[in-house]
Amino acid sequence: MSDRLEQLHTWICKSLGINDYKLQPASADASFRRYFRLQYGLQSFIVMDAPPERERCEPFIDIANRLLATGVNVPKILEVDAGNGFILLSDLGSSLYLDRLNDDNANALYDDALAALLVIQQRTDTTGMPVYSENLLQAEMDLFTDWLLRRHLQLQINGGRLAELNKLFEFLQETALTQPRVFVHRDYHSRNLMICEEHNPGILDFQDAVIGPVTYDLVSLLKDCYIKWPREKVNAWALDFYYQLDQTEIDETGFLRQFDLMGVQRHLKASGIFARLYHRDKKSGFLQDIPRTLSYIVDLETDYPELGFLIELLTTEVIPVMTEVNNKCTP
Image 1 (cartoon, rainbow, N blue to C red):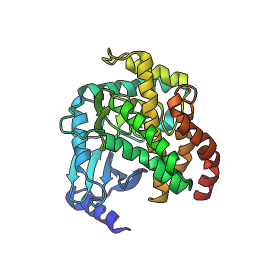
Image 2 (cartoon, rainbow, N blue to C red):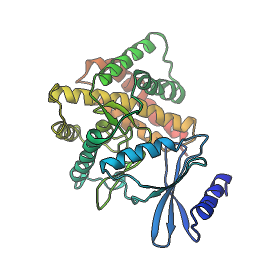
Image 3 (cartoon, one colour):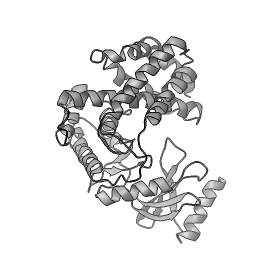
Image 4 (spheres, one colour):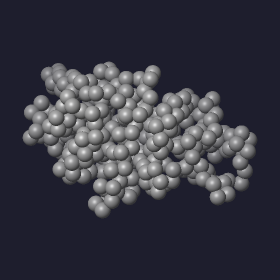
């Protein structure tokens, strides 16, 4: 047993006063946090293990309380040991959207998720929250260049090609920063939404929330890196959401443009993170999601001439070698 796990067991027994329990891994996380399901008699809880030298508990607690105040379904905080990085949470179950979504239930499940997102955007107190700044948007897209292109695929992106890519990044920043600002979860997708019998969905992994573009969480949900739907269906869901917004200053076409281009920024970021998870954190499972993630950008080829350089790069140099490179990295 590792020292960290032994420390967790000590906290459960001595601080929580719980004995004769079962503790099992509850989910895999892309960060340094770990989650365990604690079963005690007929009761079930979730324990968050956030090593203080790697992860802070305070942002999770802050955002959880803001979201709870809106009435959406997020875990309730039951006990906290912030110094050691342990939190006891209510258990929202084990039915991920990702595992259950299909053609028959997609409309109903996305209706619930979009309704919850609307509540989050309209009711969450964002006072004092960090802003999705130009620097943060740029840093996220740099992950694509540094980790996917250079580190993972060993592509040389220098000189004029790097300047062209950075010009595109500036364009995507400007597009994002001109959108109305709302509460942004930042990972509002099928791996962080739980199917619940009441108050569906349960919402997880919100601790990195910021104030940012109105389409960001929408594109995270509907252009999901882990599951893909036909573009016509995605646009219909996006417009269903648009009709519920107070968006008098932009028409449907303009909103879908914001939505699509916000997706490009997010998918560049996500593909870079997936590569970093392998090379830095030795997590290879996310490599399989990179081709799907980048396919959303390629889908826009005929609609956005501004993306020409990027789409040519993806279709001629990135995607053709992705499978071969990934196969060398996975067991």
